[in-house]
Image (spheres, rainbow, N blue to C red):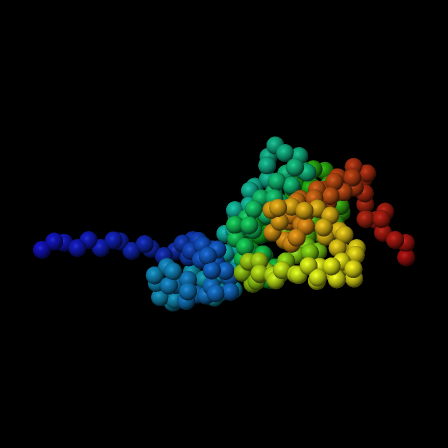
Length: 238
C-alpha cells in the first residue's frame, strides 16, 4: 500500500497572523475583516487566533505596526528637508498599498511602539537639522496627518470604510452650468489644472496637490528656522 504523505502543518505565530490580516484587508477592506474571517483564511479555528491577539482592536493596532514598519527609514546622507520629504512620500506610498490604512490610523486611540518610533525619528530629523525644540513643536502641529502620507483635501472624493473611492454619479452638463453660475469662484479654481491621472476629483491630481502642500510647508519651516523664529516672539501681546 502506498504511503500517504501529509504536509507538515505550518505553525501559527503572531507574525503570520498579522501578515495574513494585512493581506486580507488589502483584498476585502477593513470592515469585512473579522477574527472568524481571518481564521478561515489561515485554516484554523477562531480560538487559535486569540493566543496571539486578544480581539479585533488589538489586531488593528498590530496591523498598524506592520504597515508603519514599511515606511523607509530616514536617509542618512540627506539634509533635514530632503529627509523629511522622502519619509513622508514613503508613508504615502505605504497608504497607496493599503487603502484601508487611513481610517484605521485615524481611529487609533493608543500609540504602539512602531508608531512612536516613527514619530520620534521624524521629530529627530528636524532637531538634527538645527531646529529649536520650540519650532519643532509647532512644525509637528503644522505637519499633522501629512506625516502619515494623507491629509483632508478640499475637494476630496468620499471613500468607504475600507479606504476605497466610492463611485460618484457624473453630473449632467446642465447641472455643471448651473453650478458654475451659482458658484463661479469654485468652478474657476476647480478647473484651473486638469490632470489625466486624477484619483481625487475632476481637475485635481492628488499626488501633485499633496506634494505641492508638503513642499510649501517645508519651505516655510526652512524660512522660520533660518530667521530664528520663536513662538515667544510671535505670541500676541495680552
